[in-house]
Image 1 (cartoon, rainbow, N blue to C red):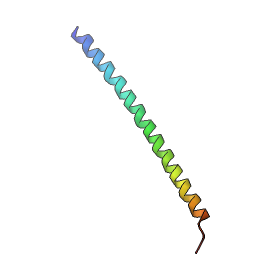
Image 2 (image 1 turned 90 degrees about the horizontal axis):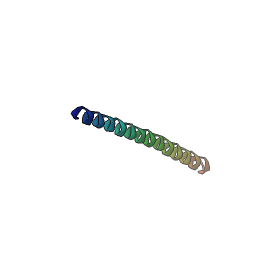
Image 3 (image 1 turned 60 degrees about the vertical axis):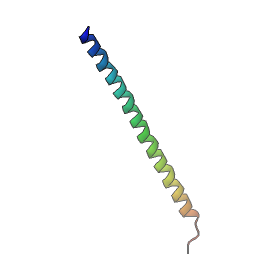
Image 4 (image 1 turned 135 degrees about the vertical axis):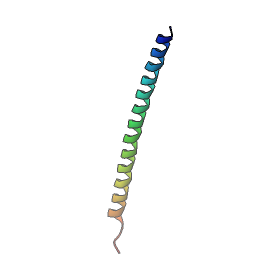
Length: 52
């Protein structure tokens, strides 16, 4: 019975790690999208600003 418990714990840890890894990847993608949006906004502002 002890071996089965260890197997269940290991499977749980693997599934949790996979879920956390997915969240980390999604967060990275969202950060990149936010950086692109900020860069596009800055570029658009630069283009519309009058030159001295």
